Length: 168
Image (cartoon, rainbow, N blue to C red):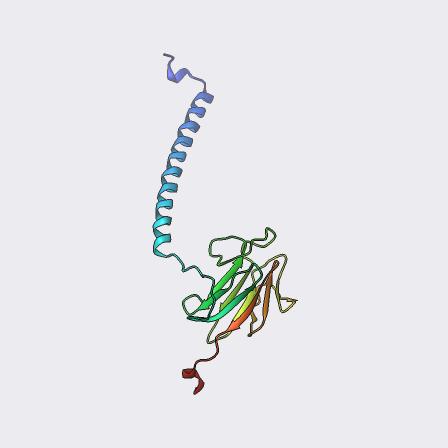
């Protein structure tokens, strides 16, 4: 066996790099597995309710009624915002067209019955009643308004005011 002190210095450097890399890989795998386990537990505990296609109002405050292939979705007191996009965590309404943005637009119910649509920085734009809306500036929605996002279209329907609010 050769005397370790007589090895050239590049051999020591290579051995040190190998040992550090091996340790870093082990730490990375350890923390990666821990974070995956934590994410699955967190996801189960904090899973957002997914919107489901709707036929009637039910408990909905507003409905985005889909035209053609686009399904209808409800805005409820528990689910006050819907994100439209191709795919992304937190996307509620999926647009199947490959040209759509990951997170394209957001429809949100603000105080009372104020419903808005906001373009989230898309290249192809979000269209409200045939006019392109400005990015990152929420625009008010009204019954009968149409929202177009990369070939998919929804018509806005709002719940009629209930009798308990008429006297106010």
